[in-house]
Image (cartoon, rainbow, N blue to C red; front, side, top):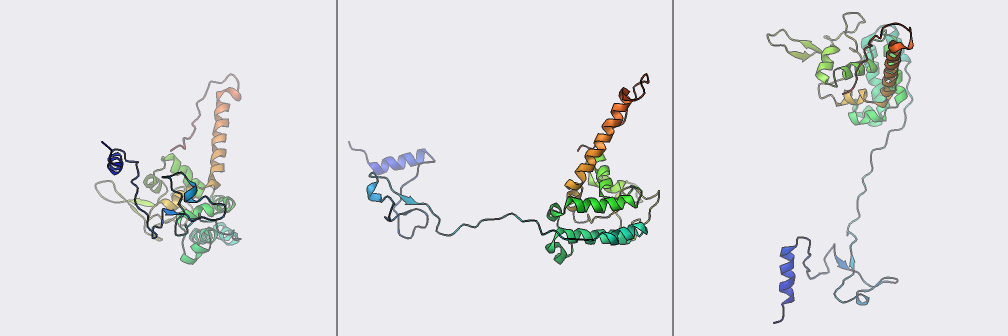
Amino acid sequence: MATNPLKSINHHHHCHPFTLRRHPLSDSSSFLKPTTRTAGAVSSAALPRGIFNFNLSPATPTTTVTPPSPPPQTSVSYDLLERHLAAQNFRQADEETRRLLIALAGDAAQERGYVFFSEVQFIPDSDLRQIDSLWRKHSNGRFGYSVQKKIWKKVNGDFTDLFKKIGWMKKLETEIEQYNYRAFPDEFNWELGDEVPEGHLPLTNALRGVQLLSYILKHPAFEEEEEEGNNLSSVNSAASEGGIGLGLKKISTFKPDYSF
């Protein structure tokens, strides 16, 4: 008895999920459309029987998504920041630091008046290092982004612990130990003193999340300084193991662990 071809096709279609059922084509089909014969093209008639030549080109043009390009480099002056820091006007220096970051992040940041965390990557290393260097220079090494990063890594990247360490959060007078953010600007310290925690300045708004501060602390500008600190620890460790002072007992040297 002859086998019904259509029934055989349908049977295989249900058994194998990757078998395509052949449908009659219409002129309005926008995906699988038989090609017309052109110069240099192979017509359907030249192909073996049962094989169709389809044009798989989409009917509409495709849209290419281009990644955001870094903004053109902006020339900025750090004279005003250094004057404020040299005069110990840390409140004004903090405001100038915020203005510089906005200027360095590009035109879009300047138009909206603040920096998106995704724009931090476009700030040149040299500019961030310059800002950080001025803060450390005029605070005896107590303020600056690199100071905040060292503390952040000591607490294993926990931002709540970081905010407690650098004084951005205050302990509440409750039976249970609780902390809350300090109110800006009155509850922050704008003077340099022993009672002011290291890394207290400059400020970065973290009320809406910690992504902006996270991207600043993870910026490549501060990776080089971290490597220098690790190299110094290695030198101290080698010296304590007998490189200096032969005959002395081996002294264990504390090596800070900045790993996450």
